Length: 202
Image (cartoon, rainbow, N blue to C red; front, side, top):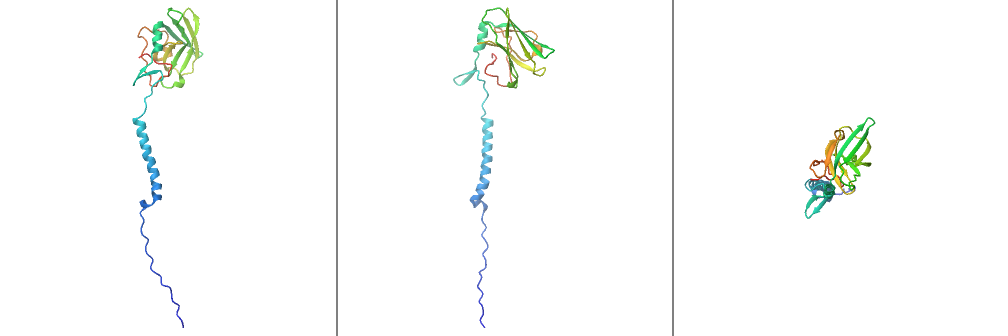
């Protein structure tokens, strides 16, 4: 009677442990998010420490310094722009603007009255003035703003500009005198950068 020989089975060897960080796939999974976090923090540091200071386009760069362009204000002084600005509101929510200029030449022709909102440029208004004869000008504007809103106010012509009041309510300007040759116009301090076509005299 023959015996069947069984094959000899060698004992299995335990698998050698593999370190996770020695695998390329591990670096791919961990490295990309880590690099993204580092790049984001570096970008935040650049944004905080390297932010540009807003400068209105109504400025002239001279060398490395930046100075305001006051040519239009200087022109207003040359013309001697002076007079009185009065504003009244009607029960029908209409703003009535009356402008009286001191007689000093036909070159003074105001074209518009600028009302600049102190924080939101989208609420700025340009009220176009119409001549009424003998140095008088007038305009009408529907009231679309909340009562008590404060404005920066300037009178403008074709080649001149004169700041009249800063952060004033229109209801308080019953009779506001102005004179380009006197320091009656306040220095306007706005918390936002003023547009290119408006810059008070510093």
